[in-house]
Image (cartoon, rainbow, N blue to C red; front, side):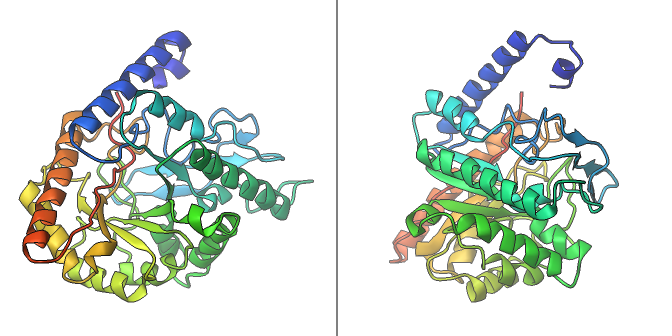
Length: 352
């Protein structure tokens, strides 16, 4: 992508490379036996900025996100209104569905993350309220179009949730994020919200995180106020998983399904199916098995320049997740408890 931006690769050549990468990802993802797949977000510049990439009303110098290893990511800032997406997630979904033989899950970025584009000093002639009205409309369309075009589920990436507590321990920022996202979700019916989920993690970029030091107990009670049917929760890399699982049990609503992270994309060590099985069984001892599913902690390549995890390693981890989930189902069945766990894909598998 960097070579394309610099003019080193023609648009036609880049399109061919994208198509090849998507086809390869879908082929390899389906080969793992996962009942639902994604396209690995192969053609997005990043999981967060795909809707705004190429807009002419952005400037450098927006919110900076520091990671534990010292590197940073910086969002752009909006310079004028009105605000409108340039690219909608449905365009990626439609390409994936051309090649997929199983259901496809599509990721979208949260309205709360994009709310950070509006500069603190304001924009003359374009109020924050006007911006938020535009943002809510665009975020709704991003989700609605994916549902209408046959996405099995739509996952809202909300990695800024845990970070919000680090930035503002009073939790006012977090709660404003939750309220904003719920303003989007209230535009959908209960049946539609059952097909929508939220992903949370402490970030995952170049094998580093931005908020792993924030206690999950500070986030989860508010997180479960989001009016969605599915939660995809990073858990494999947590030091005390049983404690987090108990917090989940205490705060999740009965109708909310919990997909626990059972593989750690930041670790180079590939989990064994038996390790995955044991993590599922650990969760099933605390949370009703009928509500459980499995996922990866985070994506393997959230930004186009993140090559910290080898492509083969990513698929080995996915394969272990699928196989380990099946082992857990067998163990639960043999224990007279019917397992209905479902393996759910992470979003960012690996770009070519």
